[in-house]
Amino acid sequence: MTKSITYILIILTLFSSCLGPCETEQEWNVDIYTIKKQKCPDMVAANYIKYSVYLDNERKGNSASKKDNCTFTWQAENNRFLTLNICENRVSEIKPTKKLLEFKKVDSILIYSNTIRQVKRLTSEQIQKFTSDWNKSKIRGYSEKQFDSAFHFHPAYQYKLTLFSESKKTEFYGYNYLILDSSNWKYEMSEFGDLEYFNGYWNE
Figure 1 (tube, helix red, strand yellow):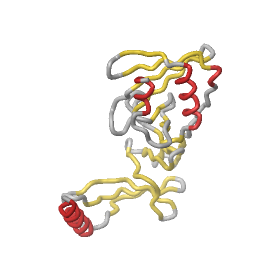
Figure 2 (cartoon, one colour):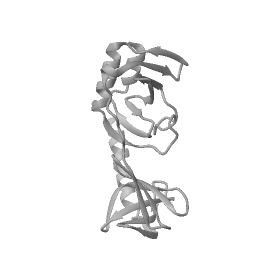
Figure 3 (tube, rainbow, N blue to C red):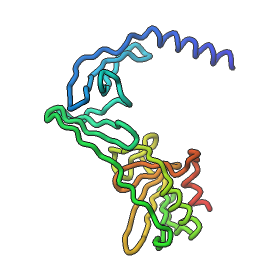
């Protein structure tokens, strides 16, 4: 089995090396950025289009997404999401507005399972863990998808959490160890990437 896998990897590597570079078909300048529409070969000898963003002739980060004839969106960094308007030569930036939680001010948290359509109330210990993990959570990125369908590998959430604090209600959506707040920013609740993180709240 090991020899077979090694052989396949060698073939794929050799095949990839035969693919030519991407060709730039069109480009636009927006403020300090340049967007290049590029046609690139793939593993089945076809072509695909990607929009690369350059700064000072150096490609930066992931590819951009074309929204319409004027606008592209681009995750510049984990905590910077840009909209590039080529018609108006304008760049708009969205940054996270995370608000820390105070455990003593949280009245209750309800967790709803999207799988079995049931609701549970978190215990005091679970609320303390949730607020602590939220305050320590790292930014994963911004989502353009709808609030309840914003996870990359799965279009729906696992759990919806509703937090009540000082007569205010705050909603979150969770999947594995990722959480999405109402501003559509994603955060990592587990520093170790525990895929059972949110299941732990439900099953405990």
